[in-house]
Amino acid sequence: MKKNKTIVFGIGNIGRQDDGLGWLFLDHLKEKQFNHLDLEYRYQLQIEDAELICNYDTVIFVDAV
Image 1 (tube, rainbow, N blue to C red):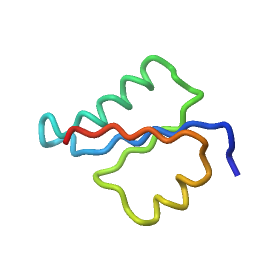
Image 2 (spheres, rainbow, N blue to C red; image 1 turned 120 degrees about the vertical axis):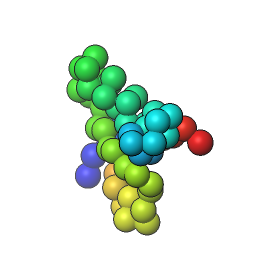
Image 3 (cartoon, helix red, strand yellow; image 1 turned 180 degrees about the vertical axis):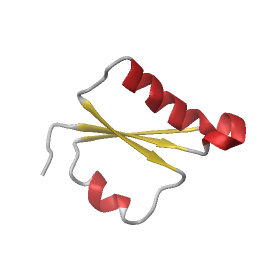
Image 4 (cartoon, rainbow, N blue to C red; image 1 turned 135 degrees about the horizontal axis):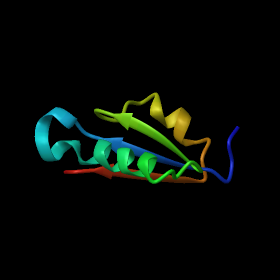
């Protein structure tokens, strides 16, 4: 179980112009070597993500809505 950890969800679709903001944000974090963050690319959240989320103290969602 991961505690005192942060996960960032980039949500969107890179093929749909500005809807890809979440993924582009995660790419930027990788480029800047934010290696202490766990990054997850998603087209949309699924119920199964709840199990993953509960293992983190901090959860950040990046989505162009």
